[in-house]
Length: 342
Image (cartoon, rainbow, N blue to C red):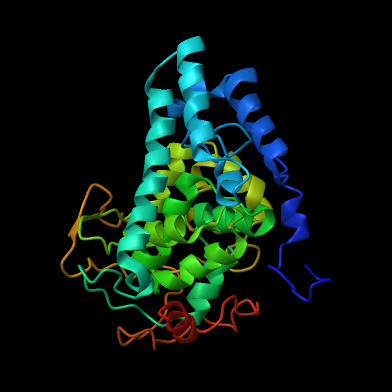
């Protein structure tokens, strides 16, 4: 890419070393991955039970990168799954893999139907949402410095490896669009920049749904509960956020709750070694309905630094000392929207 004059995404080499598998391009590598995961290691048998994992190489198929690049045909995956069912077992796991391939098709049909509307701030226009201008909050989210371990760990994995689990994608998208109320398209643009499995229909369609713009229920994820449910021992967040490696398990997903003496003992002082948590601004979108993902903030949710006296349009006081100094990630959205609408 550099030889062609393209700088490419700024992948963090230190984070890249923490990845669990190498994504090699080409059909040969794609078939090896599919056959190895499905038949040799027999992971399809238990896929329904492992698919919400976040740590490791085989909790999910990870076919998406090869599918997105055209190295693997969805029909090949389907017929391989049919063969597996005849030779091994037909169960909820085999059903679920095919079901997710159908979701992939669904977003392609949606993209063809919506065309340029897919990239508008209100999406299809079924729901009204007022987005907040908060550059510092956005950059903290994009670089894994929000102070919310599950969000930070997933964003760091994305920047280091070009991959993020399905569970992680839902949580970080919910956090940006529904908790921080930052324009969902900025998040979609970050995914476009870093994901190896990026394709326009799945990426932008899933982000619009995560932002609550499809007219159905709004799935706002309780980040702390999700972390406890899917990373109960904190292994995932400690892997990607080494600042938390000595934090006791019962504090690892809410490190802001640690008493000062515990912070010092764990060498993880909040605001020094690990960021203070961003405050959230959740407000149900007008026209949508909040579904099973809703939750009332617990008394243990962080009060943090917050953003001071905002005016509801993101013009409140910043989080304090100068942010984190990273470069902006994406081109201005107005210019991008104009280019897409042509």
